[in-house]
Length: 108
Image 1 (cartoon, helix red, strand yellow):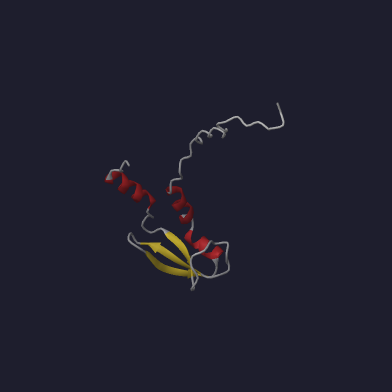
Image 2 (cartoon, rainbow, N blue to C red):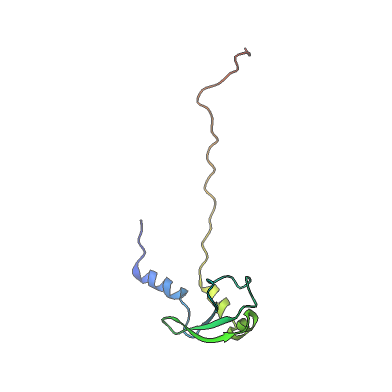
């Protein structure tokens, strides 16, 4: 297995990390994080990245209000995450063929 040099790994990790002052939304309550479409009327917490952790900075009544407060931070974060590169599919395997010729007993 080819190991990636530490400098390349650190640079790739740094590109994926949020920028200082970037905001994100988090659902409030006992539920685990879910998509925004699950309950858009539920209150949302607004968190800010301080360089080390996400710190709560506010609360919004619902998802549209919270999204308006945070602005373009969510879409900026998605552009930093690289998508996997897809290449051609591997060649199809050869079809299975029996090793012996089979004939019906009633045919000549």
